[in-house]
Image 1 (cartoon, rainbow, N blue to C red):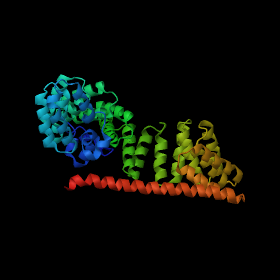
Image 2: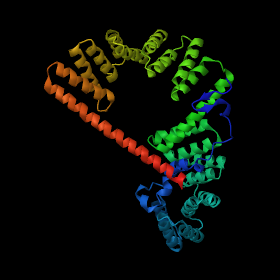
Image 3: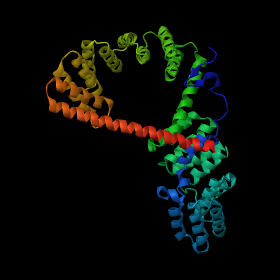
Image 4: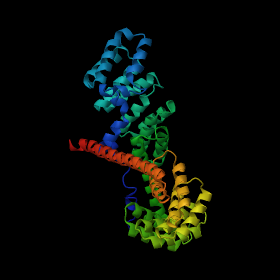
Length: 436
């Protein structure tokens, strides 16, 4: 086995290259990074309403009033700010250059000039301007951030990391600073440090798509390195077969995944978790009998595995063993009370055995314990209740339950359609730079 693929990566190739490619060289990643650089776009009139705390319009105009030479450089500074907001970068650069000449000790003026130069791609000049602003005011918020970005684009990763680390110390609440620190660390090849930085960025801004992208990549690289080292140390260990099985499963190569899972079990037959993983693979192939067998063996290896017990119960319902399922689900609910999923499945088992009243109680409990979250369990519980109320000759209750099911289903279908449209729109936007 000379080549081992783990999550799409080759063990033999995992260490190839001294650094990751520059993200901004990739038009698709550039589109993502441009969103991360919302500070730049905030200077554009179309996005002026999204200006952050670093927006030079408010910060620098405030500084004007306190500067002794404001009368001499105020006009070029104001003109430069207006030009930058309008996207007239050449004009803005001239105005800010004039302002810094008239007031060479005005740190914010050098910072603003650096922003324009960075947008123009004049990286050396931008670095010089940001450095000058920091010499004048070492704790100027945002200056180290953009200095780090400029150094990163110049492939000066050590300088970028140092600047970005200083920014995170000055402003520990800045998700952008931690994100760019992680990006620079990734570029240097330190995926472990990048993972830590990007975890902090994600904690500060959990729904940011750019942070999630880079964080996922960092953790993926950490995993690749760990798997490569594991393969070198023990290429025939059960752990290698386990991770190969997981890799094949993610690639939908289920036959290969099952084969590797069986090899892992041959080497470690009583290891908790292995039988459950193999049972999941059989279940995905709709091979219910072997899936049932593996979940049973998992329960023997680890009697406290409530998740495997739940899966065995669901498989038992699918195989018309409702009495077995009901017993298992009762144990699950003893361990995890108010589990809407378990209550729903118990309702299915009771209905299969003809215990209508008990099934109604279980589905009603599933509705209650689902809370306000719209889930498939909640929708299907309403559907089952509508059918059972009809059998109990309760037409009004049946009607209400069915209406609830239809309302939730329509909402879910509409949301799914909207998500698809959003995905197609984002895909089209990402493809535009590549087609130009």
